[in-house]
Image 1: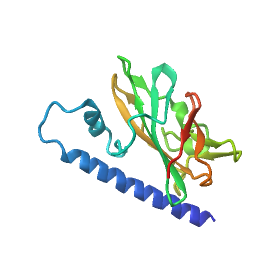
Image 2 (image 1 turned 45 degrees about the vertical axis):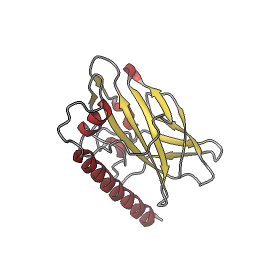
Image 3 (image 1 turned 90 degrees about the horizontal axis):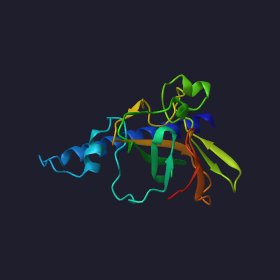
Length: 192
């Protein structure tokens, strides 16, 4: 079972890396010198190379909006079930304030294996209250969490795209609680 889990996690990581690369490539194709682009396009194209950009076709209304410490806002934009047996939660950290916000280190959780790999969203969990089960962020074969990593700050008025991957609950479970340290609990619907 360990080998199957590892290969599933590895396939998910490769698929995510390819999707992120394609999304960033498409975002770069539309820069025809027009300086008056919408702010959302500009902030999506300024995000780091390993972070996923906003996906086309996503609803403009987030699945959940959670406000953490110092006014840091997390908008969860999608929670998609994959046929490979995992759920990818995408979102955006927003700083609507007028000063730089530091991403809390508590977001990575307190598990020793995750702490070894620096800042991440490794403390996130999905809770299926009907099935009475908690799902933790997936890890690769080296113990690194399958989430956005290297988070440090969000500029005033800025956004940072984030993602987290979890094992998928049973297909009959369509609603789960999303938990992330320093943020209140939110309820999200899984699509797919």
